[in-house]
Length: 368
Image (cartoon, rainbow, N blue to C red; front, side, top):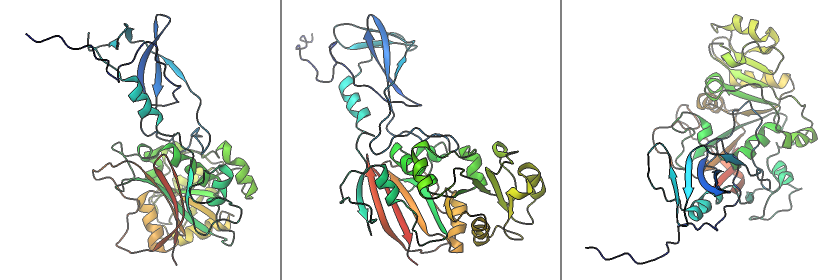
């Protein structure tokens, strides 16, 4: 017969007097249950890495010093608490689940809490009075990510990747790789651009729609002399307009294709002839595309992929900058890399590096 267990208090078991700090918004949350006034309520905790919202939807992600408001959600599952640990009973029956409140709280709140900080600025902008390691505010980020004033035309690409180079998660979408910190820079880059260029496959897979300018960056956009509208240019070798973008003939969406594209005429009927660019006879010419965009006053060009489109820009020798966010995850598998192109060895020089909660965000200039 086993001797009785000693009465030892386990440090991870929660007493009824413990309280949880507020949690933040999350589309997919982990629920922990705590009683109030005899009822059972739940608080939602963000997963380790939050995915940004759909590319065509305004984001409410955090800034370097702005954090989301706390929310509370009600739970319909049955829970009760005695003087000891919490017990929750759901569809699995009377299974006792001991929830280590304090340890989960530390895990949930350890991310997206540190201010964004500067690691490298070479050369530092004249208006930036920050030393490496300093915390950054929005004005600092605008200075760090500004397009060079001496350039009439500038093409930069923006990608996020895991530490092992994957740009999509198991669901095949980039949102499962992004973090809140990366999404701050994602919105800023759009605001500092005249136009966003993407491949048709990326538009379909990521659910792109007309692009809003994030509210928090609209003043910076105006200060840089950029109009309020952010056009989306979709590059398609066959000339097909993604279904979600069909009929948007107000200029918010432009299709770029070539003269032999099978769906050229239907695209013109869908978007309007003025909103279809023909860039080459039998294939899309990236250099000609940039020329046509510049002729419309869109010299500051941001491409968000996908890998095939970015690879074509690299092969054409027209890429000026790569903005790469490395998120602190290792995904393994066979996920795609940022560029699909023939073997090459393009030199890039790091100019800016900032960090928040383990996400490294950098600007790399092509070393021409």
